[in-house]
Length: 290
Ligand SMILES: Nc1ncnc2c1ncn2[C@@H]1O[C@H](COP(=O)(O)OP(=O)(O)O)[C@@H](O)[C@H]1O
Ligand SMILES: [Mg+2]
Image 1 (cartoon, protein in one colour):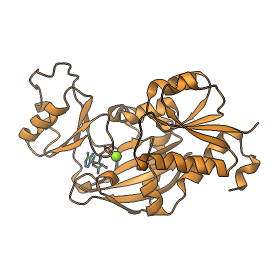
Image 2 (cartoon, protein in one colour):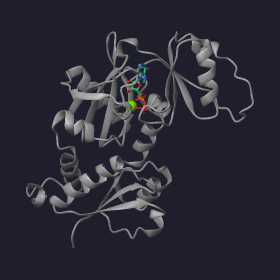
Image 3 (cartoon, protein in one colour):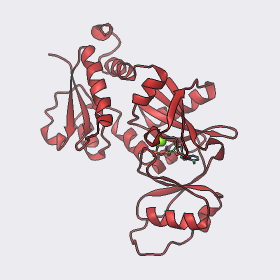
Image 4 (cartoon, protein in one colour):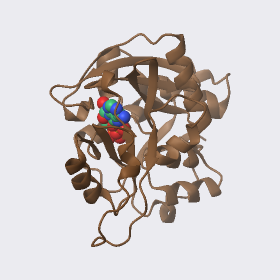
């Protein structure tokens, strides 16, 4: 019987950019002899017949991930790791004390949209400008900068009924950060991202990437974060702090297209090889057939 793998993507994903990554991983696995297929997470647990040796879990649906693990299948990444990364406040809590991060304050829960904001003095001690972030967000979409109280009130009002946090703005990192890719306890490369006219350097907002050589401290920080969170593969975003790097966030489902261009690394193939080694052991004979 052939070795089977599923690459599971979000039920409703449409954009070519989001389909690129699963296709690349699928091709890489097939080149290495794995019978890989892409499936949409549309009631996947109802359809799944238990035939996969492993699942490349590119969705963030925590319920499905947990159900699949309960049925004994190994996910890349594991469900708990995806959950901890998806929520920026949970990431912060998991890493607090282990790696340097900007000072962060969790926003209070609010279930009453019409309730007036209260207690913002508590976050003003972070100083202006300060960062307001939704806990669930990506591509820079839920990240804002408040330059004074008026903007803080407007932004806090906008996010108050969703999980959110307030964070010290790391001015030295304005418009630039470093994205480091970690795979299987190893840094496989890094790129510096530079924004064009924005404090956020996300590629999705037009930021451009250039190869970056991480030093020992940077490498150690990223490996510590990945290990603590139990991640097989991730992108660690680092801010340039006055006294060294600060961790900004960890992406369990980091896109690698821009990274591959900037670093000339075949991330899909490295990931495929890593998963095969992890599942079938070091003597997988088709490993060399690429
Ligand atoms: N505390 C901060 N200080 C300075 N810049 C920040 C800070 N937090 C985020 N940024 C900038 O905003 C970008 C997006 O923030 P991030 O937390 O990574 O959210 P997302 O998940 O949307 O990428 C970062 O890549 C960085 O350029
Ligand atoms: Mg980010």
